[in-house]
Image (cartoon, rainbow, N blue to C red; front, side):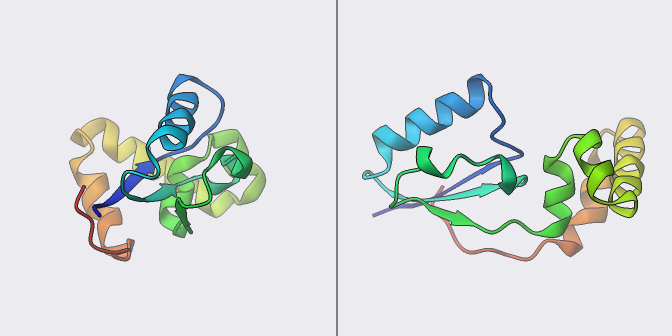
Length: 113
């Protein structure tokens, strides 16, 4: 059976979140699905089928999945890092900011898709 990783920044209410929940309900028995949500606090656990594994998020990805207002309430330092990455991304097409965070992201596994 294929191993599939689905990565998303957050599952706050909206069309993408609803579609993903529906997709997992219908397709979770077709492959081994693993879900990586950068803002894991936005996951509605009761909407995720039990056979879908939720991967704990890494701190650097966590700051990318939250809204600025939520991040400010959590940590000023993390907010400053995120704002710096946003400024760099704005002026470098995102390439430089992605290259800056990649060394801090740990490999989570091998996937078919």
